[in-house]
Structures are given as C-alpha cells and as structure tokens.
Image (cartoon, rainbow over all chains, first blue to last red; front, top):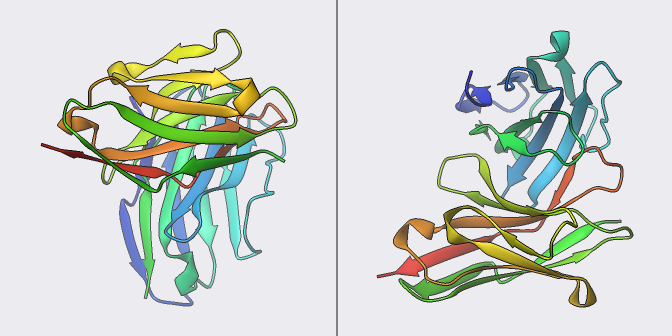
Length: 114
Length: 114
C-alpha cells in the first residue's frame, strides 16, 4: 500500500482478554517500530524490528506484551491479559533501512480496556 | 541517555502571528533531531529533521528549525500561523545506536485563534 496500515483502528476489550494489533508497513521497508501514546506517558518506544535480526524489545513494559514480524513484513503486537493501564494509542512506523531514514507512521490503533 | 524537553504543553497564537515551539535536548553524541506533527486522529507526519548537514533546517508547510549546539536547542518556528497549523507537535531525538528509535518530547498542542 501507499502508507503504513494499522488495524483495527479502534479496539475495545474487557480487562483480562488478549488483543492483537496488526501493522502492515510500507512495502520494501526493512525497519519497523511500535510506539505507545498515552496521556500520562506521552510517546514511548516499544519494540524495533530490522530485517531478519533479533528484535529490540527493550521498550516492552511487561511480559504481557509481545510482537512478531512474519516474513519481514506484517507485524502483530499482542497484549495478553489486558489491564486498564494498557489503554492507549498504539502506533506503528516503518522506514526504508532504519538508522536515520525517515520513519512513516500509521494512523494508530486506539485500544480501550474496560 | 538521550532526552527531549518541550517547553509548554499548550501554545496559543493568533492567525498570522509567529509560531515558536521550544525543544531542548540532551544527548551524549551529536544528535539527529526531528519535529513531527500529529493532526487529530492521525499518525505522526515528519515536518523536518536535523542530521548535521546544516544548522537551519527547512521543512514542510513553511516550518523551519535551528539547531543550536551551545543552547542544546532545536526550536520550531513559522513566520505566520494558519488555522490549519492547529495540531500537536512533537520534538524527537534519535537514539545513539543508529537504529532509528526515537525518543519523543511530551508534545506541544498549538492552538491558532482567528
């Protein structure tokens, strides 16, 4: 596609349920990032994928969070046993080669845990 | 560690007035610096970036920013505000590992009054 695509755009889930958020990066982009945007914490880095290298998971807030990137393209962020503090907008970005090439952001998934 | 501080969570200007959004950074190495804009319910869009080529950086929509090493600042300016400039603006610094991971400031909401 022309840009980074995220789905769903909105997700409401009950506390304790698992959720999966999807990111489809720009074709050919080797680097993919997940960020979380919340009222109290601003924009926080979560995880970074670069090609076939092991991902940088240093930003994941707990072991309830995980992500994978299949075939170097689509990525899924999974949150297990959701908590109310997980409510936020989850943004995905991709860039051509990582480093300081421009990162293009998707419109985000707004997650609400009730 | 890298960090970014945006002074003023809300800035209000009149249409046609100068826009000045402040950003100070902390970095152990020469930084790469970015300004992003976020319109309501949208992802982040790159306005401009500093990568050491020139201290005065021109971006899209008439915005520019000047890198001042002595002041560790990267303030964003626009000579004349338009109503369409109303949005949230984020300053960011790239991490030292050349991964493209971004560390964001808390954001500044720009209001433009008619």
